[in-house]
Image 1 (tube, rainbow, N blue to C red):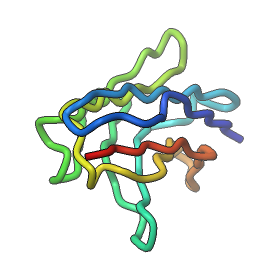
Image 2: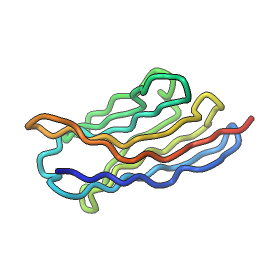
Image 3: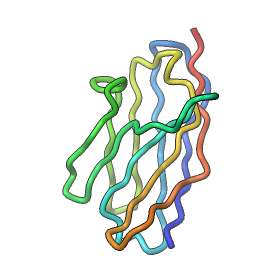
Image 4: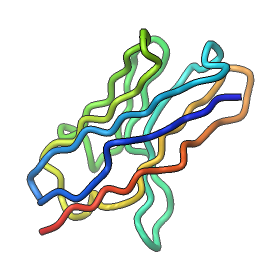
Length: 116
């Protein structure tokens, strides 16, 4: 089992920045990919960013050049630095982990609201 807890969401004006944090605990040695997804009201959950255990990264097209995913393996944390936020970035942001032996885990989510 892997337990994920997000923090750092909030209200920000367009053009501003926020940093989301995700703390992983439990059987974290099996994790090969961690990432962030978001879901806006009435829309499907979509990939924001992901990072592999080899530090390779993948970003959703709408956030490339504005968001940066990183990890701190010493503290088992994953960060999402979000710059130049736009109103369309509003949504619930979820931390996600994929272990090598199958399945996936989700955090409870943190709300990000960008005002115009």
